[in-house]
Amino acid sequence: MTATIINQRSSSETIIRVPQRKIEALVGGVLMNTVGKAAQKHILNKSKLVAKEIHLPKCGYTMYYHEREAVNEPNQDVHNHPTIIFFHGLSMRSEELAGFIKSLDIPPHIRILCPEQMGHGRDIDNRLRTDPDNYTMPTHQRMLESTSEFLDVVKCSSNTNAFGISLGGAVCYYIQNHRPDIIQRAILVSPAILCCVDKDLVNGIRDGTSNFFCLKSRQDAKLLMRDLSTGRDDDTRKKKDPVPKFSRKKSPEGHFRELLLHLLEPTEEYAAAKDVDTESHRLVIWPEKDRIINYEEGKQFFEVTSSDNKDEGLVSKSANTEFECVADCGHVFHSDGRGIFDIIRPRVKEYLLNFKGY
Image (cartoon, rainbow, N blue to C red):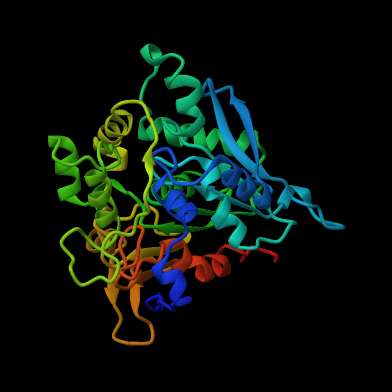
């Protein structure tokens, strides 16, 4: 039960000019080269996130991730250590969440983990690029199993909250359901649950009429940015093309299209049309004009209705689910050009920092 998010504007400069590093973080630097390596390194250093890797013996897989280790407080129970885990979106690398994480000003006694999903980042660098003939695309089950084992191997405490956006939102949804012993509270932003992915987008990817995240030209980039905002046919928004000049990074030909096709294939366990986890504590944030992960489908999945009490806003059938809408906003960009991270930051911080015993 919750009210619609209020879109409080920042300065006019923020609305007119979105910093390039934010564009890259929101869309995925693997696709766009909008900011230099020096700036990327500076942002990462400020966040105190450190690149690591760890072997998962059951899965036979090396998981790449970033971590900010906690600064232990006196008399702190290390077995009940507060931890926040962040799950990135499609095409992103784990370090691209560094700017957003830094902006949340998370206290130093809280551990931060950012695992890199299969088919992304260093998995591409160290496996796909070096041995493409033996590379296999990840499945939903494989991603869930590796993420679950990762939580055990890095000794993630039972006092853990999680955040996931888009693809990462779906990962977050399923891992919370799979590991309620670890994930206590979660924030899902436009979670890419199969039945909620926009049907027109799915059809376009399958028949080849959409180059979504498989950019081949500047025009493809413009259309992608419009889709990530309030839609390519929306003439009412103030910021028509929220994208700076950029040079396309060279990602493996067709990789993300093939990855999407694999992940869009429904399987019995991941094809549910209704919420299968009605007990978990979570905050669901959904942009009203999302053209990638459909807002109306999301409301149906979480069985959300409008309350008769105007102060209560939207109400989910699941007692522990808070569902909030971001008005006049697309998957990544608001109609005025602001990024979703800027809009949701205060609410995310408020919810994520609420730990049991804290």
